[in-house]
Length: 449
Image (cartoon, rainbow, N blue to C red):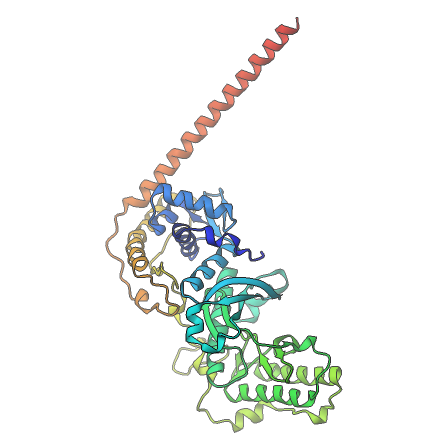
């Protein structure tokens, strides 16, 4: 689905509370029931139903009536939640034209906020940034579940969750690489599946057909591959589509979610693929002789590198295995990163809601166990504007208070009563309409004779 931010300015805070409630309900519901949306959002019946209709009208949520009436978040709804968080954090002010669409992500030009330009004075001359929206799960990229170990111990997850993990990975890699002087864009913000970064001047290498010193540029790129390996990382997708070159021949490397550790089982094959790809491209496009380009070996790099500043350890890259952890656990998947990022920072780890459709009463009981704790946590976070990106440690330590178990049951009973009443009225109206049509036909037949 294409990004259309036109309706963003018309949505109220209650609309975003409802969207966030649907997002949180989707952590353990494929289809979030209406009573749970009401309980998590903390809005009254008229308020949350009005907001539900509003967000449904703008196609931010999808409604289904079977096996029960519920909603799920759409891609655009997830886009709106992330954009709203970035605007509130004063990272961006406006969304501009699209820069490109790929198999994994869409990239747009955005305007930097005044506060961000105050924090980074160098952005004052060029206030435009690049915003990357990760969209894993497209038809052309369905193999991501088997090719990337994002889930670790999880058995399954939605594509929205995959996109969020990819954005977190990329933001972590970019922060670590930029801090160590690698030629990568400056990371400026991240929310859910969106990463905001500095807009690099130049063009993609695949669009460049003339270059004053191609041999120097090729060796610079190969040196970047070597430096990454010295820091314990392999890019895995370093090709002409992920390299930006400016008029002076300076390069910037982009696209990092698929990076792995040099300790990965396939690290040597992936490293050689990056090296061979760069060498073959410059040989075919610019006629650079293979003997004039470097041909590094990962085994030699690893043998000669000191184990001081290994970024695969810092960012828990795929393939890195901590010897102090149990076998089979790769990296340190930070559970705090899975917590909510904006004002509704509710502890959803305590939500153990049954999804058995045949037993609605058990579902109501289970949902009720956690609704009140989430309403209290939610109201506190909204008052304090808890929208910091990485401030989730407190929510992970939250202890749910005692619960009034009648809350959700009462709302479920009321919804069923209203549905039964509407069905009775509909049947009665059908009978009345049938009688009116019959009477009208008899009158018209009598007038004819």
